[in-house]
Image 1: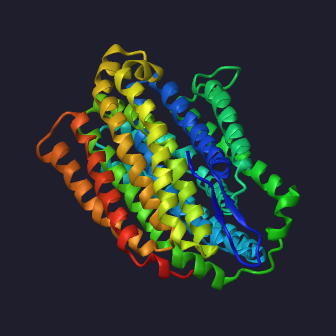
Image 2: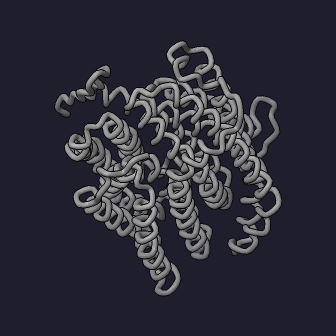
Length: 455
């Protein structure tokens, strides 16, 4: 249980960070991630009953999309850090211009990536994918999925705002809207129910686009009409302010590169697995789906740590940062361990959600066992790493990421290409990644000069 923390700011309203308040900030983020990954589970489960090729191709296409998406997500994280700092300082009038200019910038960025994908997707996949069937299926998926760049980028900018000002309740509603729309449309369009055409893998992609568009509409209406957001002056946009964008990019550019490189490396991981065969790729996609689902508690807490560390520093209470991080680590261990044990001892139960093929279920079990244990490392490493980002020292975070990825890629290349091992052994690269990243972040937080950072 977290002890009560009271942040006394002279001449300002006291910022209260009790266990209850931390929970109130974290649970909508948790629910958002949960529902987003229900989408992932739903897509994977539907496509697992279409074919192993569709299941594997959705992994390739999905991670490729995610790598580009993370550039926009990185920009929103930089915005979130600055918004959190201004919120801690109670400088509410500065938040609106940060949000509105950031939204314009991220929309321009999304259109650029949409055009890039329209021109180069087929060439990129042709160079990287060895199976003709997987190649054509991945292009079919990306033909529709690329339109999500626009709505997904809008949504992460709203997410950065809501988390930064610690008003995350709307994220719960938007997540439910996204999940419900996606599940209904998956059922309708993947298999051709209710008079819809049977689109297979393309139907899963189109369902995701429409679901994210519905979420964007809701978040816009909510922030426009809710009186709590009037003090931020979110939509009183007068001109494009290059100074504001430059300031956000100063913080976010390294996060953008860091996220892109990180997910691109994961994309390389799937490309290496694809060369091991369609069965291995399908088993890996099942493992990936469980992996991102189990990451939710740690990821939600890591997001909360990032924004509250920024708020704490903005409130000039830097001495509270390390005790706060330690308490969150304890909470993460309590949340993750029971789930870890359950998925480790009953992997077949979870594999059967994605496929009814006994052979594919058995091929997935070793991967799922490795993934289950990796969650402990992931929860600790991600919290420590996001705490570094929350201090505003994104250059340091970027350096930690790049250094870690060198060893991560080396392990994958050796176990998948140089000395081929079972897929479950290749997945042990997650231990390498989170161990090195977590230790590096811990050392920096203990000895780094983050207390002197001004943003």
